[in-house]
Length: 89
Image 1 (cartoon, one colour):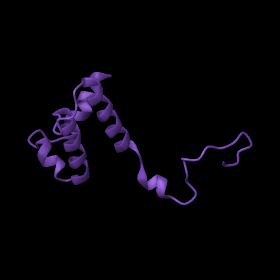
Image 2 (image 1 turned 45 degrees about the vertical axis):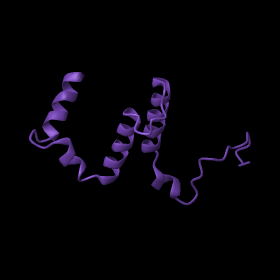
Image 3 (image 1 turned 90 degrees about the vertical axis):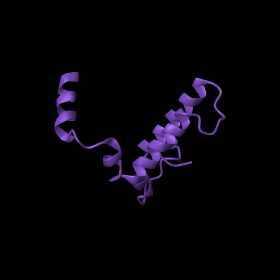
Image 4 (image 1 turned 135 degrees about the vertical axis):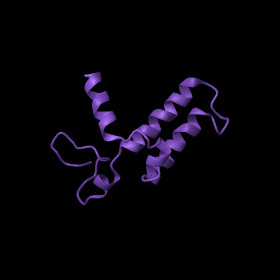
């Protein structure tokens, strides 16, 4: 399976294009990656343990994975729990 991924990865990206050049097309993604790098490099100077850096990275990745457009749709509210009868609290 790793071989198939390598083939797909290599075929879709021109070999002469750098990551920085590719990220120019996605400024929001670039900013998020820079945030992750800041955490990794401890840019704020406030991370003393690797576990804290890991927790922050995980939280940032979760935020990246959320679909804000989906949550903004009318009728979509994922923050309320339903009761056993299916009604919202």
